Amino acid sequence: MPPILIGSEIYRRSSYGSKHPLAIPRVSVTLDLIRALGWLPDAQYRDSPMASPAELARFHAPDYIDALQRAEATQQVSPAERERFRIGADGNPIYREMFRRPATSAGGTLLAAELTRQGGIVHVPGGGTHHGRADRASGFCFVNDAVLGLMAWLDQGLTRILYLDIDAHHGDGVQDAFHDDPRVFTLSVHEDGRWPFTGATDDRAGGHARNIPVPPGFNDSEMLWVLHEAILPIARHLRPEAIMLQCGADALEEDPLARLSLSNTSHRSVVGAIMPMAPRLIVLGGGGYNPWSVARCWAGVWGRLNGHDFPERLPPAAEAVMRALSFARAAGRNPPEAWFTTIADAPRPGVVRAVVRRAAARAVEDLSALAPVVP
Image 1 (cartoon, rainbow, N blue to C red):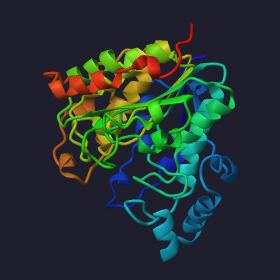
Image 2: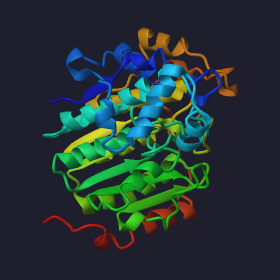
Image 3: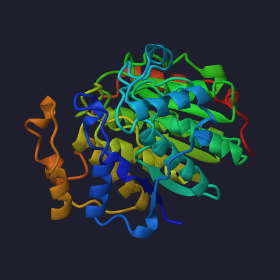
Image 4: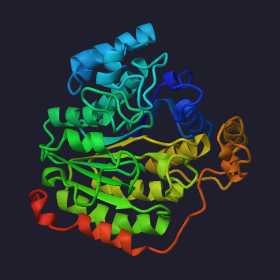
């Protein structure tokens, strides 16, 4: 079966608020760009269902789910619930679709887990809300669709799952959810010293997690080093039955909420390298706060999953999608022409610094202790 793309129109009309980093369109522009490129036959698209409260309760506390639904219905939250559930606090705003939108993200990832029951590849750019906690919102994430999708795979009987996270922010919510479950191995590559200020190299979550914190300016050459010296050796050792990749676009150089310097070439390189190792593969979205860089990155990931050739210049319909965007931050005042006319960034190579080499080496220490090697 060819790869499947899961999307929803809820993202087109939904915003966290005009001053929030998630005021920008992301999933809707990604889908528009993919369609304008002619890369999305009807047979490869599925509309995301909305996860039910019962499905969300597989991980999330029922009283927290109730609070999210009440907050959406009333557009307000009591001081006690704000304090307890962090709704309307810490960058987790009250907005019109604040239950339906995350429930749709979760529904998409749950559908992806079902579609890959017998194998295959599914891309869910609306997923990747990796900070969500069982009983509270965190880091713009009201639910944790990645955790729910991984639990769905476990419910199918899988016992060797690799969760790989290349978002600029540590995948703390997923790591902590599976702290005591050796069936899920979590591996996060993220900016050192950035919120949520977790994910140090010695943070090993009971032995079945690894973290690779990288310095500001992390470049394509360094990502290739991490890929070949840490990510792929770990995957080869684990021989996973399934891989879930959180493909946050905030690690790109143009992103305003991080200080990493990757091109979108790196994201496609990671995707291409792990595809042959994944009998089941779900690729999620995640962070990303520049509308041009997010759409070009995630559309490029879809192109890589399908083996499409990338045009040197976008066709007129795709270029029109990109030129229709606007961005209130400084980067939007004078965007470079390449953001309108290309999908692939120019590579951003550089020196592989000693700190990156050390972090990658630490991640593969004592591999034999991670999990039994399958004969």
